[in-house]
Length: 231
Image (tube, rainbow, N blue to C red; front, side, top):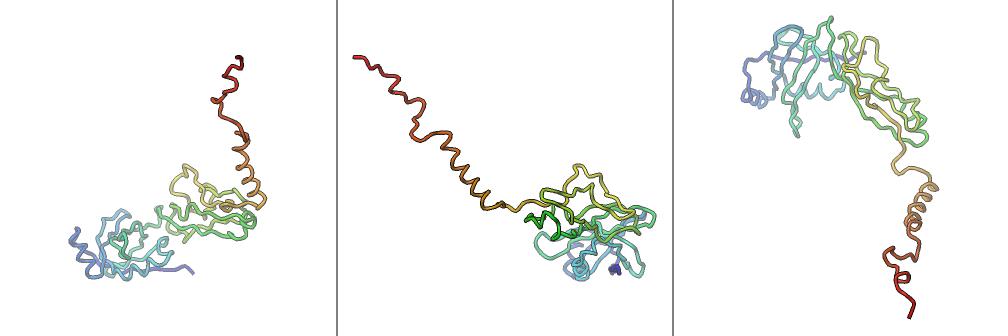
């Protein structure tokens, strides 16, 4: 069953930094709604309610219901400004959705079968280079997340952006250039057998000796060849 979210909001007329600070002191936060060929509307939201919603991963990639003074709007969260170090939201942007128009939104990636990948069974480690992607789709096709199946990855193999399996009606918002790896399986750092480690150590130790044999003198010091033995 798909999760639903409803946000309570009130219209506001005051704008500017001073007005925003006053809102935050009262436990509220400023926001704005725009899109769907309608005029933007400034709104006031309850900070505590927003923090509760934001604790759910699904909130970021769902169609939300914004209850604006009794009138309900379907929106998606487009941008969020947070305090650099306090658990405080400073501003929220919402975009209205139209059933006939594509929306662009970031959705999380969920990685499946990580422990059963052949490369992992051989001692490799999973590395996530990308954890979310921006997609374009109609509202009815919006997925909560995109699953990435890592179950066939061998050591040294990766899955790239262009190789993601997207749901019907969903596409990447931008052509993947460069085509970055999303997830990879690589050898454990410092990995290798004890024998390989020992061979490497011996080779490294022997290299200087091979380049300069024991007892050899610098090329510039050739006293025997330079002096005459005649009397």
